Image (cartoon, rainbow, N blue to C red):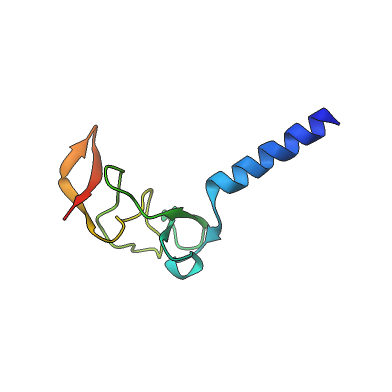
Length: 93
């Protein structure tokens, strides 16, 4: 019984962590974007828009999905001149 409960909790954590599946931005909630844009026919995952100091994607998605990171929330910009360990970060406008 304990093993079953631990498995259930583990699966629940994975589902919550990875978010909803998506094929395009329209599949995600407000404040989220669709990531995983290697190809247009594979499902991506909805992620929260990037906050100040978080990694972001400055481009627009050519496949309907951003590659790894979302763009920044409103009031922030994804400035490619601000890189930390190779990652572009969100900063205040």
